[in-house]
Length: 238
Length: 298
Image (cartoon, rainbow over all chains, first blue to last red; front, side, top):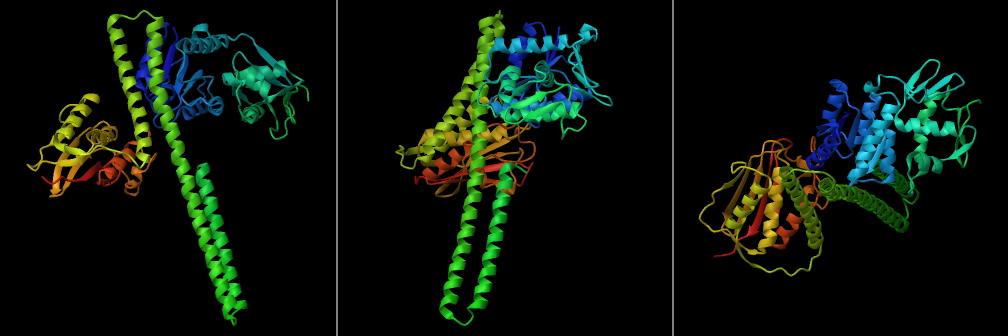
């Protein structure tokens, strides 16, 4: 049984979600605003396996909640629900640290599938306490850095950084295509499944963050290079 | 500072700099042409016109930027107000379609969906009414309307809709003069309902609303709705009646709406030859809305 936190101020939707998630065999808790969610997760340290997070909330919005959780080192997977659903909003959600998104109104079956998908990824990555805290050994090493996809972590000589699922997926994609340039559009489509007219520059913020994790001098990147007019190239040996 | 505030700051600064440059040019012109009357006068007049033009242009620009901002707020609010009840209804319909649900739950779900449909209907009505209020030429059937039973009926409906007790919305007894006005009963009902809904929405957890119908002068009728809620900052007392405008104050982000309710109220009040105004001692100290209409001579 997984524990899911629903952060939603619309009581009808929150109750409907809780009913369905409980019918799926999970246990669900509802927080009606962001502050309550932050208290549950950060102050009371209540263990949750996934969060269903609405964007338009009273007080702090969903984007703020996601980034505050990530900043505080809380990496529980987040499925964001957004009424606006424009590609820019979706990317803003990913940047804030969300792992998946659904526009409102959503298909119930898709919501359940997405939540289960997040929980499955969590189990694969060995973060689930029920799985005994083991990792799957999905590790990639280059130039003294270790990308531990299992533990969702980047370790360099003097530092280590936790990764969100989205960052993990992006790094995995870059590593898979090591040495070759990959276009921004390909990243949007293959990594995040976004096809519509998204401003492809939105990815750049993610790359900036990844460079901070793996580069000695992020302003002069050696491993994660910009390919002018195309996109990016990951070079394990500079 | 938002993008729009930055834009406003930029254009205001630009205007100040250009005006300063024009003033400097005037001074230069006056010194250079001190002894020639015609160019002196012509120069001063043209520079003054240029300065006036710059100021008018900047004021217009800033007002447009603010209008745009209100418009964006409206689009966001309406998107939310339309999509949320639809999302909720779909969620419950799909639940009923795909799961075994016992009879009691089923009834509860129907209730929820009905109230979502009502919410959606209210939003659509507000948008349509606001659209209709924008059109000036409108034929309205004007008949004598007794406000006392009309207000009593609205209060009763508001109590039902918001699940409130009789003392949460108290209707004060009025004097003997029958408060009769000429107008459209349906529109007047909209006015009172919108004022009541706002009073409930902005009351927070402590709903204590007083509604009164009175005749302060022989030819005037007042309908007053007074709440003890979050109040309105003094500076915003007039702007709240503008289309799309929503009160900006601490802790108000949870109050949802389209920003059209009071605009509709004002339009209807005007078309009935009356007015509506708000009073508030400030944030946290409640607000009183007064609808003033000309009384029909009995």
